[in-house]
Image 1 (spheres, rainbow, N blue to C red):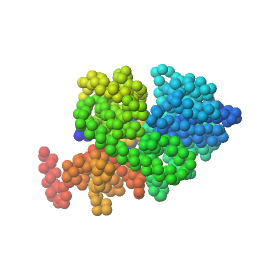
Image 2 (cartoon, rainbow, N blue to C red):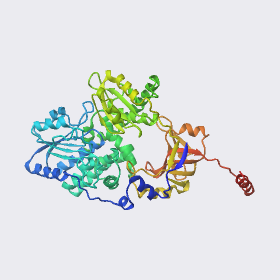
Image 3 (cartoon, helix red, strand yellow):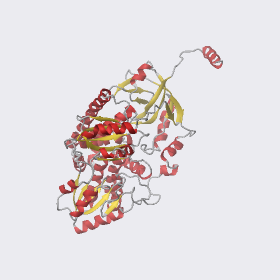
Image 4 (spheres, helix red, strand yellow):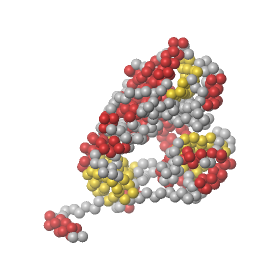
Length: 553
């Protein structure tokens, strides 16, 4: 692997500005003027609904963003003393406000509000209007080529754009902005914490408004007065002072929130936990996440066996049908395999409808999977998504036809083997603590604001509890190295480490963050590493002679 410096930038500030597209002043800003078209109309409608005693049904989504959006709407509607009920879709039935969901809503409700969905719910919204219901859509997804649904009010910054205004919200972020128009400061702070969870978990760009939501939200989360959040954070970080950051949300909190919807198809359970603070419910959520992890490990192993048995190595995309994989984790499995094979993957499983299979696609930067599905749409029942990820369903009899079509489309495509890795800045290992302090000023990092990548020279492995390193991870392929006041983590690094005879000094390419599990310390997430050969116990004469020899080469 060739290591190359990306460009001539030489400071963390310059790299962060380039990665985020934000100036130094913008990066330090803590509040933004926000103008979201039609959001004031929603606030006015809800105040009037409170005065006229209208009853409102809220239809959310089954992922982290949808659940957090539902909790925020709960806080808002409670503050207005409105009679309401939150409804969630079922993965087994399908995403979005479908007509069958409208049929499930009690006749007493006068209006339905969708949040984190609805912009393409033509059939469901028409059914609600036919019942005489008012319909409000609060969404952040792209509109359908067919246009807009027949809702009374639509809030979607991707559809109705204010000039030079931010548009990359998640659903809960929009809900939080609505709370600022209606709720008192205490309730706004509750909503902000859930908006921070969703903004990270939904992988929207951590720029401008989203950056402030997460930055300000994390301060509240680490000192939360919301019992359900306090219990959840203690479960993850222990009973010491919490030090939750965006990484904790992305890799710990988000998966726990998502697990109930993935494993038991019961997103409503998590909503009820957050609005009740029942510790027994939390334990079930945590246990379910452990089940989810095991199911993913098993499903990935089966999928890799299918790739071998059906000789799918050269297929683009690799289409894997495994009826043993539950629908809630097909996207996770597809994502893992895409990382492994550096190629798009479609993971399919059985649906509740006999003869129909459903699944998720994940892709690489060089293939737009949504456009690929457009080309085979005649063989699909339903599909949708964007360049990197999509969902789809088809009759099982069409599976071979889909494979044949993709073979023709991508016959000349070759997976690009990238033998070059780029870094932004170069430091010595002893500079890691100071570097971490500088990085914290520009956090949170994530989508749209990637952290700088460092070349770290002369990382020395030092013994900790009698060990220079530790093999970790469920598959035994991850490596933890112990340094001076820091650690380095390398996924799938054990084999290479062994092949280099377990070196004690390394040069490392990676990103630097803070590990908050136990005593906080700097952590390097390794992208690549090389062995550094040390010459020890040399006399000054030997060193001079060696320098003369080397200078003559």
